[in-house]
Image (cartoon, rainbow, N blue to C red):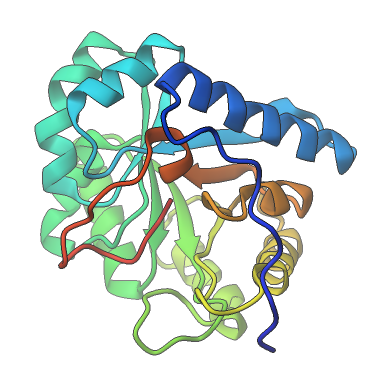
Length: 246
């Protein structure tokens, strides 16, 4: 991929805006971008990235009607969402961070969508745990569109074979693809690549776009956008945290 200057970030809420204003602003940007691309705004799901956010902010988001949230870590999500999901049974919880095989049991029990299927061993573990629990979240394959050695994800050229293995070897129904483009590169190239891979594979779901570029992602076909900072404000992520997902 060729390096290029990034496009302007989407309109941001004022720094002192409350949660209701922030969500209204982001939803407005999504609607505008979708209509500009000739798409139905309802085809784009806003995943509110609630990692490292306090429960008070999550409750404020729930109060304005948000029901789809993304978390990076299984243990953090268990601590925050076990009670909240009982209180709000219509919540849809997405795992958008890396999943270790020793956390698969808890992930299958808690999450409704796992966006980061990224290796054969994990696919095998998810299939086995799904049979044990009699349920399996919707699954997306994470694609390493920039082929960055430090990042998880399936290389683009290997996506067809990995999808076939998920389906034929492990009996998994894959719903779509997800990617986090390299931070220093123009995201449009990566969004176009991911959307094309999904189209060729006949997959309906494409998860791409974060706070700095989700409007562009919508225009290029995203069905899930993962937005954190624009919705909840700046946060101080722990030093050991996974790559930014919102």
